[in-house]
Image (cartoon, rainbow, N blue to C red; front, top):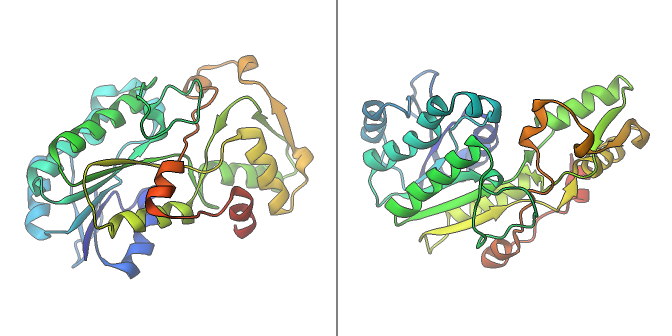
Length: 283
């Protein structure tokens, strides 16, 4: 099977690439890098460059992981961010056609984050420019590509994830960290994500469908406490605080509960992921 992975140098793409380089014939693209038999640099905002990409490789599956995930940038430069988060999706379908199988990596930010436990059937209501762009991209694939899967990914993590690295750096310096105990989400262990993605790549029924890829619903405080415990650091280095009491614009992107329910996805794919505790022990 030939797979084309976009955004191979990003955090999500960097987790996907090593796995599928062994499981399939993997071709990769990003905006920079050398040209090899299995890699081509291409600006997905430019239709001519995407068409050149389509002339280079005719994949069975395209995993579209490229995009600008910086919520602050997307909010302040919405038109520019939309070119890579939305226009690039249109360009892929224009260049590769509607009969290619597409797997689009979307986000939990398509929801408003007010009640949590969102299912695949719930109506999205994004509260950020980034969320609106991800939802617009979902609709592009679902409308124009009959063989398309949408994977809403929540807070992917391994030891190189931003939050985990921050916690580890602070703990190693014996510095306490304040974390919200009233902000809930569903962090996704990278191996659980790859398990779901692998099942989708080799799925026989490749028709329009939305999947949720998220872990257990936890508060940021609980996650940090568990990370400290299973990493051998004192749990008293994690201090509780409230989102309601926080000041500053940096917290605009946090809502009370943006957790995802992935029960339907796991049942459909017949998968059993690692628990959060098992994942943190493995890390």
